[in-house]
Length: 107
Image 1 (cartoon, one colour):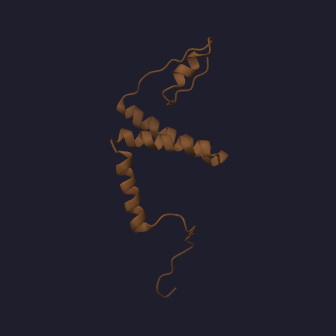
Image 2: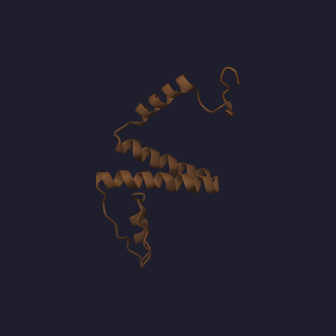
């Protein structure tokens, strides 16, 4: 028996059960634990993306972000409005700018 103790995608138990020798032991999380596990999953997927630089890992990261938004009752449309408003105020990252330092008067 291998222990995982982590948040999984919805179809994973079904996928595991297709192997005749395996059975997934799962539980449904309460809202507090779900939030904690989403945050852990976000870190896990970010780490995997940074290690592999793989677009598939980036897709996993976005899926977790969508789950977090859903858990916060924020629609994708509302999220896009928030994102676009921030881009309008502060810009995006398209110009590849890197801030080295800020000089104060007299420096």
